[in-house]
Image (cartoon, rainbow, N blue to C red; front, side, top):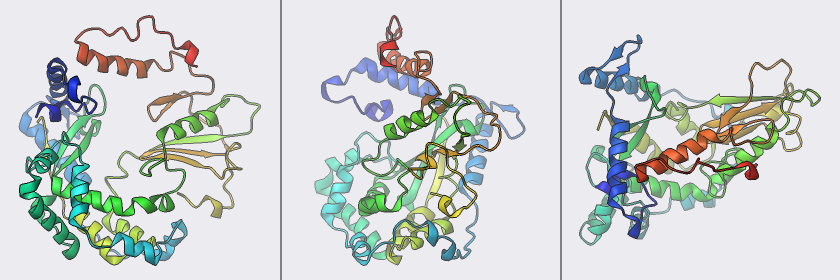
Length: 382
């Protein structure tokens, strides 16, 4: 239970220090407590029942709503498809699920991950596999045969993690879904089926989700493109940092299904995905690529034309690059993937916020001031 609460995956074996555990638990409990929140009118609310209703109303508006069931003409989507699944690829991702595949997926889930509404972690299923393994495997295989998911298996808890040090509104919290282990196994099997073809489907400029693509590649390339950005002698250039923080929460189901059809996914596989995303119901826990080449008017950023590069993506962090035809009102530095982007070499002052976060993390375990920043000189690194 404590290992689930501390969320320190690097603590293994002999590193299990009780002082670190209890300090981490206390820190997380204090950070996650919500004592007041601003409503839509900007009024501060402190009553627990009102706070709960504000969060429920917000996520009902964000995640709820009726399905439109509108038909989407795939002719408008086909130009976006980088790859259409072949017959062999389609057969491979819809092959029958085996007991060994179920067991492998379950045993790859970290034991200390937070459980879903049923309260059972993957550690329980691993420990009791000789007893429950046959029934669990049968239930999961039955889903892939029938395409129907028992409602209780897709119950999900939304736990709220503050995105800023002092959150004031609901938008300052990031919802994290805590799903039941059986549902996690189903989703891991689906992911493992499409993992081998993801690099064919996802744009090379998106550096998340695909094995072998690294966040550091985006950081280094972005910093290189921003080098000398404030020099007037260089050609006009433009970069847009786009906030897609709600993009993955508000994708319409019908658009998702049409996208899978566009890539040539088999109907049975699409049915599996549809059942997983449309059958979920949530309980909120309070206190507890673009067609640039087809656009004749688009002009590349002066350092990106040879590469046909116009965007850098990592999950919902997006940078767009193009030639600048109007005077920009923005200024550097800007933060990208947690690090500052500037037109010159990084200095110690530029990295100070990152160092402070590292220092704060060390204080949790030490219970006192950390010497990380005292007399530490990073000038040789930049």
